[in-house]
Image 1 (cartoon, one colour):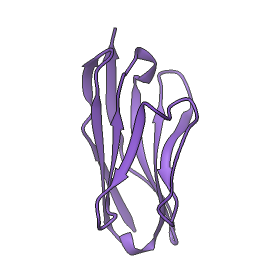
Image 2: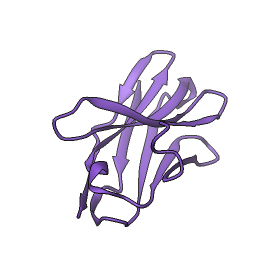
Image 3: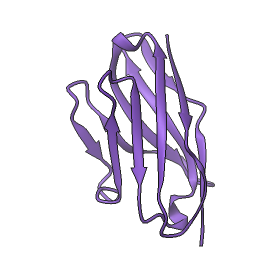
Length: 115
């Protein structure tokens, strides 16, 4: 079992920045990949960015350049730095772990960008 908790969401003005944190605990040695997803109002959940098991960072094409992901040395905490935010970035942001035992999701953190 892997437990994920996101934090760092909130209300920000357009053009501003936020950094989200995903803290993983439990069976973290079994994690193969970590990623960020988001669900905008009225839309389906979509992939934002993530790390492969080999540590490569990948990004959704339209977000690359504004969003940056990073991890701590232990690999159990992942960050999502979001810059130049627009109202289109308003969403619930989720952390997902793909582990040898299955797929795990955090409860999400709300990001609201005011225009």
